[in-house]
Amino acid sequence: MWDNHRLLRFIANLLFGVSVLLVLAGAARYVLRLPVFPLNTVELVAAPQRVSEEQLQKVVHEQVSGNFFTVDLGRARQGFEALPWVRKVSVRRKFPWGLQVDVEEHVALARWNKTALVNTHGEMFVAQTDEMLPDFIGQPDTVMQVTKLYGELNEVLLPMRQQIRQISLSPRFAWQVKLDGGMVLELGREEMQARLARFVKVYPYSLAVSAQTVRRVDLRYRNGFSAYMPGSEV
Image (tube, rainbow, N blue to C red; front, side, top):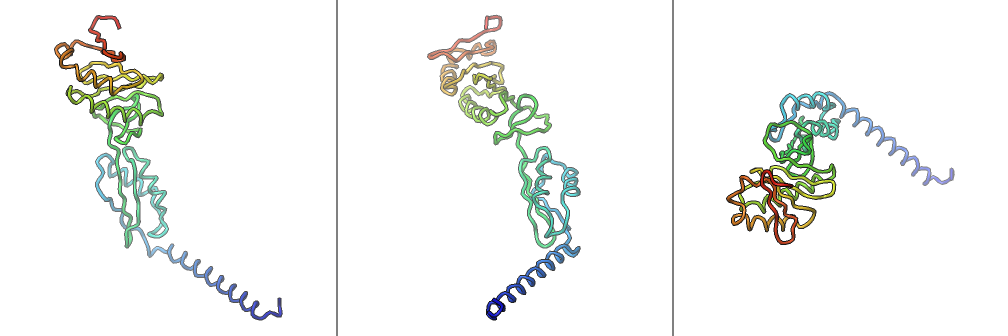
């Protein structure tokens, strides 16, 4: 081996090349960390409606560190997404010395079990609001299922000019809805849309006149329904 001059020259050149690359990498890392590349601005794509300027500034001060090249974008994004009402955030570098932050906020659709909120994507989140929202009641892993049926049943209810004030899914997977007029509809565990559609179809001819006094309607019958007035047995 030591007599093979071509091999020795190749190894020497290889070692020299690796050494140069290591030196250049170290120099580049040193240069990129110099204070000549500071972050001067954090720009919002659009002004949030629910998140305050103070909350955003707090995240910038606590989670955004380093310079233009060394700032941890993932850490910054997680800091913004930890704020109430923030659903998703995109953080990217903006030349020459800034960051651009795009904040997507939750749009509240309903209250979940009176302890949290549900957004229009069927996702549960925790935040405070004084809005009048419908109530969703169900098991923790059924948020998306309840949200989906809520939208479908509201479409069916359009001819009645009423909307759902509360929708409940019991532990036995039986559905119940309460309308904004106060009427409670028992839908059972299957064919919920079809049962509600039959009720909506006959509603103008059966209960429309006495709708203010009907407190509960059981739609779990094959070809009809039963209505309960105040004082009647349930």
